[in-house]
Length: 399
Image 1 (cartoon, rainbow, N blue to C red):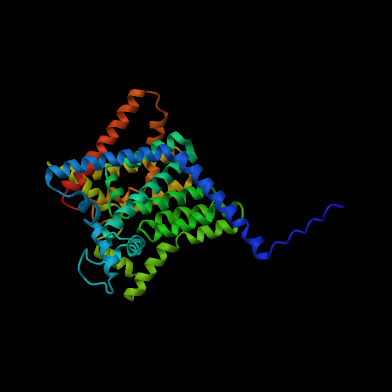
Image 2: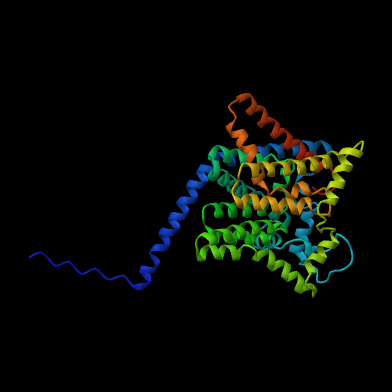
C-alpha cells in the first residue's frame, strides 16, 4: 500500500492574518509603478523645464557674481522656516510688524528639522532637497488630475505649464509651495477617484503647510457634503471631517500659545494680512499699470498674473470643471486677490492653483498646428527661465 501522506499542518491564526498584508503592499506598489510609468513623460517635461531654468539662473548668477545655492536655499522666507527649525516659535505676539514667525505654518520646518537630524546635510540643504523632491511629487499629482479628466496629453501639458509659471523657480527653493502643491494635487485626485479618507488626510496635511490650506479644506469638505446628500458613506463623512483639521489645529494652537482666541489672526494683522475685499489689490494694479511711468518689471508681472488667473477661473467655470477644482481655485483667488497685505508675493501665492491652467493645457494638447505648438512651448520655457532668473537676481525683495 502507498504510504499515507502526512496531514498538512494547520496555519496558525497569526499566519492567516499576515498573509493579505504582503499582497496588499504588492498591489499598491504595482499600482504606483503603473501610475509612475504613465506619468514619466510629464515628469521628464517638468524636469527639462526646471533644469533649463536652473542653467540660465546659474549662467546669469555667475556673470553677476552671485551664488546660486544661497539664493535657492536660505534667502527670504527660507530664513524664517530655517529659524523655526532651529529655534521654534515665538511665545508672545509683540508689536513689531513683519516679525512674528507664528505666521508660518509648521509642517515644512518640522520636516526639515526631522530629516536633518538623521542626515549629514545642513538644514538649508535638507530644505532645498525636500522642496525639489516634493516638486516632482506635485508634478506627478498634477499630471494625474489632468489625465483623469482629459487624458494623458492634457496631463503632460498641465505639468509642463505648471513648470513654466513665471515664478516657477520657487518650486526649487526652500519654500513651502512644492510641498503644499503636492498635497493639494493628490487630495484633489483622491476626491475625483472617490478615495475620501485619503482626500481628507492630504487636505489636513496641506492645512499644516500653508495658510491657504483652508482653500483645499473647503473644496474637500464641500464636495463630501454634496456627496453625502446622494448617498451615505462613513468614508465620505470621514474625508469631509478630516479635511480642515490641520488648518484648524494650527490656528487653534497659536490661539492657545498667545492666550487669545484670535491669536493667529492678530499675528496676520502684524503682517498686514487681512481681507479688504480687493481694495488694495485694485489700487496697486492701477498704480503699476496706469500711473507709474516706469513700473518695476516684476510688479507688472505680478499684476498680469493676478488678472490672468481671474480670467482663467472664469474660463474654467465656463468649461464646467469638477466642483472640487473650482472651489479650491475660487477660494484661493478670493484669499489672494482680497488680501490687503503685501503685493509682490501674490503670484507665488497662486502657484498651487494649477487647475487654473487647465484651459491652456487643453488648448496646447488639442492644437493641430505643429508651428503653434513649437512656438508656444518654446516661448513658455524661455519666459519661465528669464522670469525666474530676474526674480532671483534683479528683483530686490522676496519672490
